[in-house]
Amino acid sequence: MNAPTSTSHLMPALHLRDVPAALIDGLKARFGDNCSTAMAVRTQHGRDESSFDAPPPSAVVFAESTQDVADAVKLASEHSVPVIPFGVGSSLEGHLLAVQGGISIDVSRMNQVLSINADDLTVTVQPGVTRKQLNEEIKSTGLFFPIDPGADASIGGMTATRASGTNAVRYGTMRENVLALEVVTASGDVIRTGTRAKKSSAGYDLTRLMVGSEGTLGVVTEVTLRIYPLPEAVSAAICSFPSIEAAVRTTIETIQLGVPIARVELIDVNTVRMVNAYAKLGLREEPMLLMEFHGSPAGVKEQAETVQEIASGHGGNAFEWASTPEERTRLWTARHNSYFAAVQSRPGCRVISTDTCVPISRLADCLLDSVAEADASGIPYFLVGHVGDGNFHFGYLLDPNIPEERVKAEELNHALVSRALALEGTCTGEHGVGLHKMDFLVTEAGVGAIDMMRTIKRALDPKNIMNPGKIFSL
Image (tube, rainbow, N blue to C red; front, side):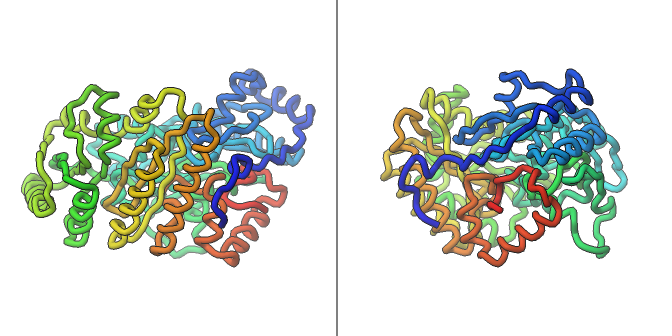
């Protein structure tokens, strides 16, 4: 794993394969207007929220059923042409880029909630359902789906990247909350993994294999999820601190004391300023924790009082409580808009957004040194973190006309991830590997583990057509 030294090193490796006219003709014959080769459509499906650029796919198929996905994959397989699943395009690490050419399969029209099993606390959905849509459709049952990566991502995309987000400290990640899947394999066959049962000892855990595989092993066409009762009481609070260290120490102590906090988000002073300007808020411009407590009224009150006492011991002040849905929405909207606020703060910029995760006891060691390096670099940045589980994100705001900024930002990212790995953390807590973290994954997992992953990939996808060039190279 070497530090970036030139802009060419930072561009994705392109190994474009031929997409024969016979395939395009076959797709148009099968899908009609649901297959597009228009440049505007292809361009939309050939980019995500990463800073990478690559040529767009040769065609986009808008799938409306599992059979549509299977037929598209079969046609692609006959011609050994890559297939790239597409949900809403909110991934951050180049997952959607057609670095080896191919076709994009857009599953956004597969957006039905198929069944709600309130008594069993499960729901089954198609992959194009978004998290907000899901919660809107199940709220009348008194249940909710807690995984919240910030963007209104699709459930299929969240499954593919093993997403988590603001609630993970209490409710876990997609790994813990996906029970079963329907998947179209590289040959176009349809398989099912898992059941609605809460646990199983039957055979290999193919569900866990698919969760986080980033479209490299198959296309997810159905997902069965755990859902949870809406808490009887919910309270949110913000608290400002004299330093990031004080906020981090408060978080560490809260987790180590076993307080069952539902959310605890760190926002640095740069981000607070950006959010204030973007959302016309008047938040105190200091490092801040944004917290949420779930449970009974008495339990929420006890949790909040405990955390307030811990925070006070670290210089926390200006507590602001939000008990009504409207007040909580205002606070969390500010947090979720931090990315857009940052982009607006430097018009025309591109963002290198990266994340890492470390054991909670090592959070201060990793985060504070990384902040010092970012401050010294002179590159504008924002910092947010799901710090309750040791996960945090830097977003470096780059002028695309100044290549040196890209190099410097990648050097910062290299130092950040190297530090996290040295502290027994991971190169990505929730973004996934995609293109950006491939070298780091080798360092984290080791050559033997990567070879095992390659063996699985080759066995399940011998023609290497499922989102090739991501996670690791073959």
